[in-house]
Image (cartoon, rainbow, N blue to C red; front, side, top):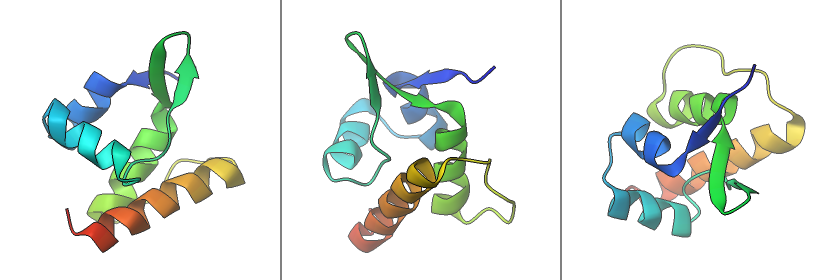
Length: 84
């Protein structure tokens, strides 16, 4: 079963504080979240793929739809362009 990852957990996995996380999100340096009710969430494979690509881990990313993979890769490119 695929888990939904909250803002708090995503920030923890990245090792950043809440303000930095929101700056990254506002700057397009994170994949776009999905809204469930009032909450913003990311699918766990999206978070894993983002971390693998953003930090250059030498391992394959989880299988994603073409749309989700594109969103992840765009966010990683934006992150690297911003040099945050």
